[in-house]
Image (cartoon, rainbow, N blue to C red; front, side):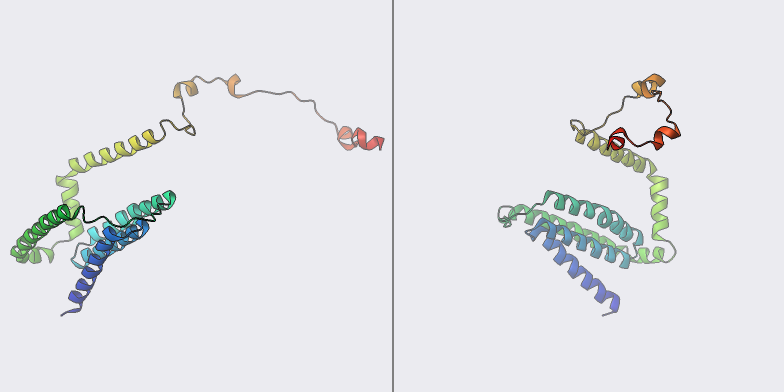
Length: 210
């Protein structure tokens, strides 16, 4: 067994254990940390398979942003559960059915991958993964990419508006009122008498009486 194969099997075992811990952990924080470990291990597997862009994207997007957001939400909510024993027996049959479907899909992918292994090896020696992915995204799927970006922006704006719709701490602006503002509404000139040096040098009346 080569060293790369040994590392692959070790990472695969860590990935399986962390994935099981995600659904079997009793504390939500432990499940989130196990999910972060699964993401890291999956990124290492992607890099070993030659998909550097996907591995780095998995670390930057999911581990660096999504998982940190999950941990912050869990810490802010302080979701401590005293009696949270997993009720897996109730969902055992649907879970087995979904697992069987996923295994069948993976088997089909592996069989198709073995059939086209020679073509993939020949193309991998002359092409770069990141460059080819960029060509596909920005040449053939640029319309879908822009559409997804607009949908994400609309969803983010909608979430912010729904969150602050009835908040008493929200500060709103009226552009029409800002444009129609006058100088007298914002500025007031106050006339104050000038103080001489003699007045400033004299002590207060109470101190002089003492």
